[in-house]
Length: 422
Image (cartoon, rainbow, N blue to C red; front, side, top):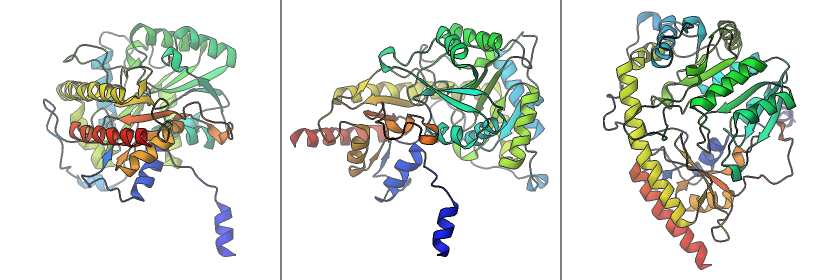
């Protein structure tokens, strides 16, 4: 009876896509240190040395006062360094500049997004399909706002223009819009003049843009060797009045996911609200790691690291694209950012021609991928019982090393050959 009561006290909490596939792989003997496994489901980049990148940080000093809690909004030195980074890199010559009060530091990207969700009022919040799997539970757990799905079409390359944005805000009464940019999983990017128009429309119609920019340094539009970084911070006119929140951190763009040092940038009043939310949600991040992160925001470090990322990851992207297409995976749009390829496996032989069956077949060969249905963000399971529009899709990560990708592709060849022979 006691077991029944304790079980009924709690609801079933679903796992995000990456956690689900990793758990399934672990049940089959997967270990991150086992060289026989190829983890193309991982949501993190390779974290070792890259040609031309700054040396990796392997030791962190702990100051005497680092034994104490950090402020919930982050230590002031780091917040100042983050604000200065945005001003130097993206806002030179603009009269409105970010300050430490425009920054709220948190212990991971999910913590930053959760603080924002907990701080929203009774608004309609738009979100895209497909998008980041962790948004699903985030959009369901807080009941003040109403989540509104916006379907993006593969036939249009998942395009969503500024004109589309205006129609959605006016037609659905959106008070906010949450999106990853570049998009996880499709790699679609909104940047340049188009992002400038998005910010202008948000300003004119008072719709807050919640921009998850954790992949903003993984950009492949320009020539190799250039250092483009995609951020809406370039297009904000008034940092206190424009309804734009930017989420970023060291997890992806600096390749330190284990540090869990992230931030939100936006108007001071909103940052105060996020800090208040953090005081009861998570209590703040690691003080020693926040202090250690400050030198990584120097212009020299950012430029060298970003250039190295874009050179190495562009090579991996091009390799994985060509190899997936060779074995029969269709890609609606080559990724302009992130380190993911969103592939349609529907034309593969029966038995591996939907996302879940391909995932199961890959597991048998010690390869991990993520079925596309996890990115069909469905808060509250309101569309339960209906097949996902993305059931034939798989997200392939080129976060791992090139050697791991090559090993995985040789196993995909075997999977396709075996399915074809049945």
